[in-house]
Amino acid sequence: MPGLLLVPDYDLATRSASGFILRWISPRMAPIQLYSILDRRLPFRLSAPQSDIIIGVGHGGPDVLAGQNSGVILKVGQYNPKEIEGKVIKLLACQTGVTLGPDLIDNGAECYMGYVDDYVWIVDEDVIGTPWNDALAIPCLEPVVDGINALLDGQTAEEAFNLELKGYSEYAQVEENLLIRACINFNMKNAVLLGNKEAVVKQRPSIVFPIGPPPFPKFF
Image (cartoon, rainbow, N blue to C red; front, side, top):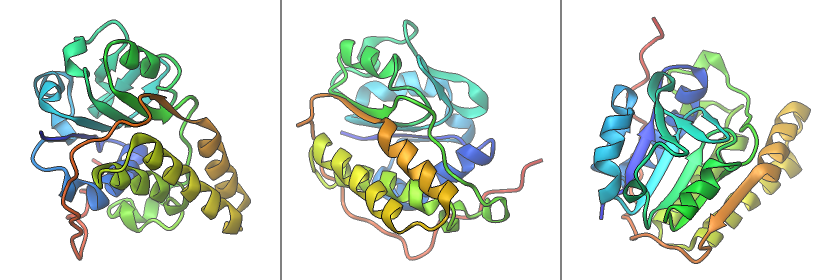
């Protein structure tokens, strides 16, 4: 069963987060990847039912996940439960754990991992073309990547979630920049796992390319 990856790229925040996912997760998630202009409601609606795991980057609110150019991907009361039934769902998006996450579980998702408040980190605009090299963003985003990779290695949702939390804790202990440390702790505090903690997905091959994807084009 394929997985589904949602990676918008239209502003600094989405390029930064999507960059880490494209570098470290995308090689394991072929073939269904809704990147950039494909990250819209219709492609999602058609692709989601065939997937066992949905990994979504984007801006969010308590009841909504937005894709490219803030178009709605999932919103409470505006999706078919067949799109998410039986899925493991990880959303790197602000606040979706408040209402959307519980609603996904109520409508048949196997489990949801996300955040009940804003997800915050520092972005170095000078390296936004290759955001996976952003040393300021790594302390927040690398734990997310490690948790997702654990899921793709066949670990349970709880094991993957705990690995993400462990990553935050380890980075917070050594981070000297007080603002970055505050971001790490904030994200750790607001991370949530809902649904079946023992949920697993099909194990994917461990693929790491020696170099990253092509740089993002400049904003126009």
